[in-house]
Every structure is written in C-alpha cells, then in structure tokens.
Image (cartoon, rainbow, N blue to C red; front, side, top):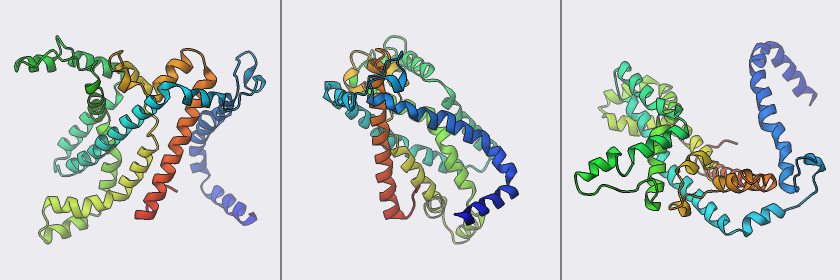
Length: 305
C-alpha cells in the first residue's frame, strides 16, 4: 500500500499539470454523477418534500411492487426492449459503413464536407426533429404524401398509426445520429498503418478486399467496445422523442418505461415511484452490459473490464 502511495506521489510530481487539467472533470463527475446517488433512498421511502429524504418514512419495496403490479408495466418494458433492440440492430451498423465509405474518398474536401453535413443533424433537438417529421409526413401537405398522391396512395397518417411508429423512430434516429456516431470509427481508421494499404495494393488487393481484410479487422476492437456500451442502454429509451411522437392511436406500441415514469412519476409528483422505476432501469442496464461484456471477453478477449 505504501509502495503504491509513493508511486502515486512520484507520478503526481511529474504530471501535476495533467492532474490539474483533469480536476474540473473529476469535480463535475462527483457533483453531478455521484452526489445525486444519495437521492436513490427516495425509491425506498414515502418521500415527503417537507420532511426531506432522511425524514420521510421507509416504504421498503412498495413502489417496485406497485410498478410491476400495473398492467402497463409489462407493455412498457416490452416496448422499450423492442424499440431499443431494433434501433441497435439497424442503427449500429450504419455509422460503421458510413465511416468505411468516407475513408474510401480520396478528396479531403469532399470527405470533410460529407462528414460535416452528416454531423449537423445531431444538434437538432427532439422538439424540432418531431416538428419536422410532422411537416414532412403531414397527410395533406407533407411532401411524402404529396409524392404518394401521384400514385394514388397518399393521405396516410404516418405519425398516428401503430405500424409506422417504429420505422419512423428508427429512420429519423439514424439520420440524426449517423454522423456523430461515425466519428469514433473515423478516428480509428486514421490510425491504420498506411504500409498495410501499400502492401495490399502491391499484392493486387481490390478496395473491397482492403476494407474486408485491413480496415474492418483494425477497427474491430472499437466496434466491440461501442457495441457493449450500446447494449447498456437497452432499457433507457429517452422519453422526449417518444413522448412527442405519441398519440392516443399509437400508445400501445409507443409507451415505454421513461414516458410512463414521466407521466405517472413526474407529472403526478410521485417521486418515490419515479425513482424506483429509474433505479430498476439502471440496475437492469448494468446487468445487460455486464453480461455482454463477459460474453465478449470470452469470445474475443475484448472487453471494457
């Protein structure tokens, strides 16, 4: 223990500037990530604002049981897994393919332009995005229905029908996050030794074979790590976009855990209930990422921990 302390002190003396640069991030982590964990006690208490967290009476697992006894609990969990699963299935490979495509463009100006254009939608808020979808998919004035009218198929209620909710959610998510998610893979591709490309060219390897045997194996560790991180959000579908896309007609497929917590826990001021469901979400996500990490470590020797 003393040897470790001496090593740490020696490293600190040599790299104290780096520790000072790291200090704001550490403070932010403690203040906004670890300090609020004290509020998890609310999940096990009948929280009363006037009594505070410690002064409120204990409720045990009351609110966990309350959640699982409701009819909507199973539906919201299934919808959450369904949306997350299909989003992961279709959205995860797209940034990888986009990064591989950009890497094949020889012109740096064209490459930077395409990357910038694909990156910009990430900064559009959920409110603006859903507003754009309502305009584009309007049954009367939206250009999609105007186009379909020419073939006698117009007037579809895309934003309210159950069968269209998931495709719209996934496709709009791909458009919005593709460029941002591709940044990690683009960075990984830049670290590939150019000598590998030169050797492959001399051997007569085509562009496709260079992608297949050089680029994909080189960024495979990054892909696996990003996949493990993505599985850790299987039960964490953000409520903003889903809530804005909801209607009474598509509620059976669009009600997820986060929107249910927002409606019942936050709007109705049932803070203990909302905290209990949120804690269940976090624990479930941790178990999923732990299992995925263990499987990845056993199969490929690549893991987060």
